[in-house]
Amino acid sequence: MTSLPTRAGLFVRTVIAGVSCLFLSSGVVVAVLLLIGVPIYAGVHYGVEVLSSLAILLGFDFRLAAEPLAVALVVAVGMPCLAAVELSLRTVRTARERSAPAGALAQGIIELASYVLLLSSLLIVLSTLPVLRSVLPLPLFGLLVLLGFFYLLMAGYLWAAHEWIRSKDEVNDERTTGGNWLVIGIFIVGYLSMAYWVGFALLVVAALVWLVFGSIIVPNHVDGVRDAIERRAAEIAEEEPVDPAATYGITDEAKWVRIRLEQTTALRPTLLVTVTGIVIVGASYWAATFVSVETVVVSVAAVSAVAFVGIHVGATIRTEFTGNNAVLRNLEDRFDLEALTVTDIESVDQIAGTAGSNSNSDRKVDVNASLESIVTRLAGQVDLPPPEIRVLEHGTPVALTVGYRPAVSTLVLSRGLIETLEYHELEAAIAHELAHVANRDAAVLTALSAPSAVARLARSRYGYNPVVEPLAMLVGTISRWYVALVSRGREYAADDGAVAITGDPAALASALESLDADLERRPSTDLRERDAATAFAIVPPPWEKHPFFDRTRRFIARRVFGTHPPTEKRIDRLRAQV
Image (cartoon, rainbow, N blue to C red; front, side):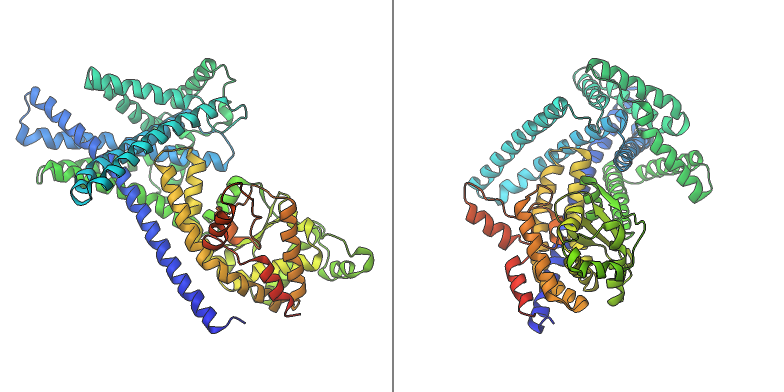
């Protein structure tokens, strides 16, 4: 039983961690809103100025029609551009889920959006420099400018190194060559529009408009262009072309969205999109006739950014609470994580009887014969619904439980853990994880680890990005601190809960000892100290000694960011109860 001071301390730590997580998530959302809103504002503002200038040259009345019409036209063009980015993000995400390569069009648009994000971050920094110069001491301001310069050098170097390594990698990855060629073509068009004639930029606009509406109206034509780009890119790179049948592209995602819209609204998607577009464009024209163009442009940028970010935040929150949370998706993204398939299940009594006999004292429990029975029985003892069981196909011993509610919790056990532990030890380890569910530890840690898991997913899904990468690293570092703040104290409570379930503290002590020893013998790069998933593991990963500052690094990793108390103390505490 946990003492009152310990309970009070855990409550205070949880509150501090929850507030930190809330502030961190809010800060990330604000940063993303700025990163998306700034380029939208700049693009709309630039488009309105160009079209207004052209309208004056053609003799339109500047005061009555030119600026409102320019606003309406720019908004009409900007909508397909944002739709193309959204479709591309959805395409890449779905392609990853299906273990298929994403199409060149989607990859090219995401690569282009990465450069736009970089430009957006620079614009934000440049806009804040005058303010910082007026409030900061000159040495500190100079240091910030110097750090910014080194950041640009690092970002450019790492991006170039990332592309070079990817191009030299002989392993078949999920990316296709055509996307890079699309980005190069767009940059050429952009250079021509800046250096010679602004009308060249209309080629990019026309391509994006064709891409969105073509994916809905004439998808076969868009697929043909995509396949031609892939074949040509493969010829230049002297590679085998990507099989079109194996590629998941924008048109495939557009078909899925169209089907969902038809099922949800019972309306034709083309009619729905057309009416929505007319309403938005008409509202922009009407607003520009009553207020200043600057106000309309700022409003368009703000509404677009909020809508774009809101869609993704809403989808993330919805996914979190339907059982497929970010921590679990992160594990699925990195490892072979299979649902348990059970055949010819023996009764628990039979297994327990054979496990207890002398002739079978060294027997390892077969996962297909007993795991479901063990989990169901132990969960029933604490009045919990049995969690879904997922098997991690890896030799490293891992046991963890994630989920916001007991009904949608998932228990992950690795093959290494199942093969390492005896029957009574495996039972104690499972009881420890179920105690986390009963104590709501799994729910708390799943929520606190969500920002870090989402950041890791973004990094792995969309590749290196000089804006997303530093932001993801910052999120990971901060979340590691407050997750560790909470998880250390909860391990003792879960140990007590496991003993209450099994009535055998020696079994859990033996399991912890076996797992700790096995991890020391077989260190793995799967779950390291900086990995958010380590907070859910039953024992921490082994410490890797470093040639320099090992003691300092160990103190920071195990005391400041450590997610578990020392395993030796837990073992001694359990054996004292025997």
